[in-house]
Image 1 (cartoon, helix red, strand yellow):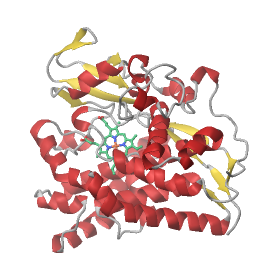
Image 2 (cartoon, protein in one colour):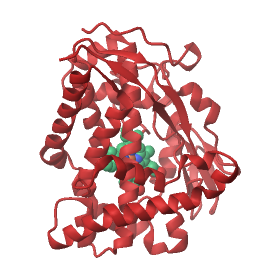
Image 3 (tube, rainbow, N blue to C red):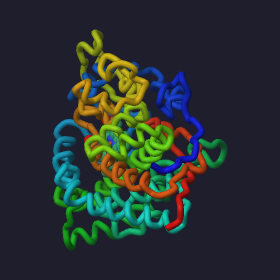
Image 4 (tube, rainbow, N blue to C red):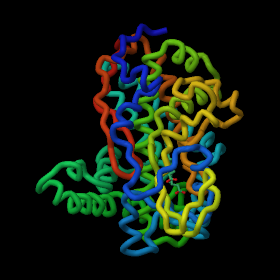
Length: 398
Ligand code: HEM
């Protein structure tokens, strides 16, 4: 076992084992005017109801301009089923084993080798590179230079200036459009052209088979890029922080087989869900949600973080990490971390697999230590998530 540097605690007795709970308590707020639900069974009823619509704090800007441009995230009913049907083959256990694993292994090996040569790196950068590589390959953008492309995707969704004041805030929408246009022209268009000539096993090819336009494909590339990269990147860092902090958990992770490692990761994610709150609006009344009805047209804020702590479902001492919890409670351990119902995260197993592979290699590196505890930030609005910046790790040089 490596001799880990003592890590400053990111949590305290009041927040249990969660590192991000204190920050979440400060920032996670239900949308004003919405009905706030927090019990696990209430969330499940709403998310599995076919009459609910996606209703985030910021609804799809593209959908407002042209409904045919809605991404999978904002589609519903038959159109959503068709889109899921077209892409789900990219996320099956078979696709993960045969298609994504070689890519994940290779990317993780290269990142660990580079770290060992230098003896120092930023874990948040390492996780950014791994998750970007994996998601670019799934989308069909792997020929593009990775780092600038992923930055373009992120900035197209909102530049950090949105949260600043003055002129920078005013100019933020223009900047986002500029990055969006640049992602479309520099990355998406050439990839579409290549796949028009020869299809591959990726998202762009599947959407071309569906007869989607370039603009529709661009919207979906942005959605999958953001959904697949940002979430997993942050989860890898927070999972690593837990393994640095707790010797017993780290030992359980390293000594366990693949399934046992996954149980450790899912249990960490239960306490550190990347999406703290998701939103729906009811297109028709929903009966018996925790004994009450939701009116047609009513908006609901669904507290994933709170639902994952619902003792009635997750069992005793919900604020503590217990990798055996899912087995004891006869649950698959995903709880509410990846949502539920029609929009349940298609990439959940990809996310857990890449996290498992990277952390399994990382925590075997001789002399591994965390030398700078990252700054924790909060990124509203949409999914209300945490972000870690500047997590410096060091090791003995190879
Ligand atoms: C730890 C990592 C991840 C977490 C915590 C996560 C979480 C979630 C959650 C909570 C939802 C449901 C949102 C809602 O119902 O409003 C969702 C949906 C989605 N996720 Fe993930 N996700 C992760 C990784 C990924 C990856 C790796 C991909 C793809 C490569 C991905 C693609 C998507 C897509 C496309 C949707 C929308 C699906 C639909 O609307 O039908 N996610 N994710």
